[in-house]
Image (cartoon, rainbow, N blue to C red; front, side, top):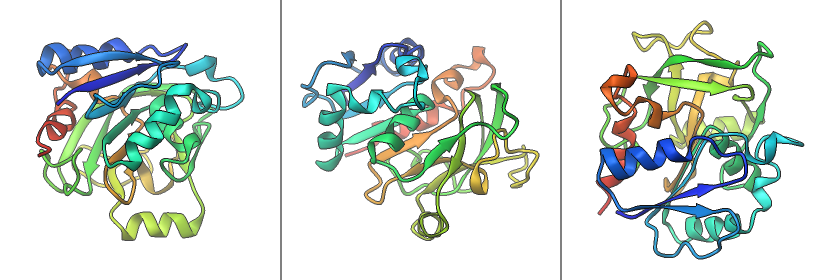
Length: 228
C-alpha cells in the first residue's frame, strides 16, 4: 500500500501522518506538494490537518482550488482511497467529495483534548479493523469542527451508513456532553457512498502509539492496509 500525504501551505500534521505510515506501519509513503498533479502511483491519499492557507475565507476554501485537488477528485472517482483528517476533512467538504459544511465550534473556542468515538459502521476500508460499537480514544484539535448539513442529507447519511464515527462518552453513550463542537448527531466522521473517501475531525495519527496516551487511532490506518 503506497501513501501520499498532501502538503498545503499551513499544513502542520503532515509529518505526524508521515511518521505513522512510514515508521510505525512501515509503508511506502511520500509527501505530495499542493502544486503537484501526478498522484497516480498512490493507493491512498491523505489530506492532513493544519491551517491550509491560514484558514482564510473558510477552512479548506482556498485549498480546495490547489492543483493537487483536481487529481484527488479524479483519484476518488476511480475508486482509490482518500482520507481527510481535521483540516483535510474540511477540504473534502469544500471540494464536494463529501456532503455538508463545517461551522465554528458551538463554544466559539478552539478545542484540543482527547475525545471518545463510537464506531458506527465497520464495513468500510477505514474501519474494518474495529468492531461496531467499539469506543476509540482519539484527540481533537480544531476551532471549526461543528459538522452541519440539511435534514435531507443528514437522513441520507444515517440511512446509508455513511456516519462512521460519532462522539460518545467512554461507555459509548451518545450525549451532548460528549460532543466537543456541537456537531449534528454527534457526527465525528463520514464517508461517501462508495466508501472510499473518509473525513473525520479527530486525529488518529496523534493516537497511534501508546506513548501518546492512546494507540486506538492506528486501527484506522491498519484498516486501510487490509484492502485487497
